[in-house]
Length: 157
Image 1 (tube, one colour):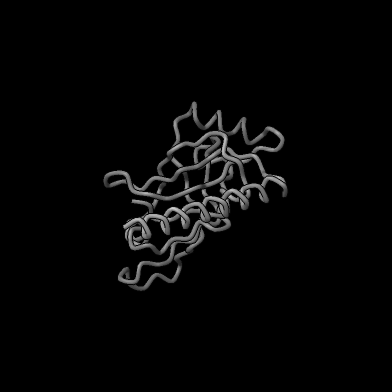
Image 2: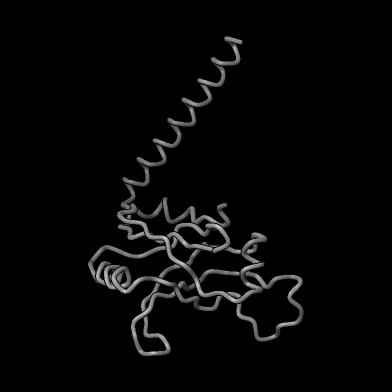
């Protein structure tokens, strides 16, 4: 089940590769995410050292609201950095892609897989303005085709 989608990412970036990763979350954050109180708009992936000094990937700027039944939590930060769970090989590959010019790593969608909450991230290249115009044109054409097909189906019945 899809819990949140970063629609702006697919409009601004062309996806080259996608990965499914886990997240380090608190229990009340999991309940809040499952109830739909999450927003990926403006979120991005950053690489920095973790507690042990090794490079780790973090989800930054993702807003997870406080779970309404969690009680009083004065020190809760809704936009805290959340560590991503990746294999070392995947982490090294993503870090090298991030270092390349013109490529970035962005969160695409948050979903459930069994009882786990997973994040789909993608290596993306920024679209130029003319690419964005083409995608808008394709979307409009597909919408017109769908409406024509619907009207033809209604008239044939």
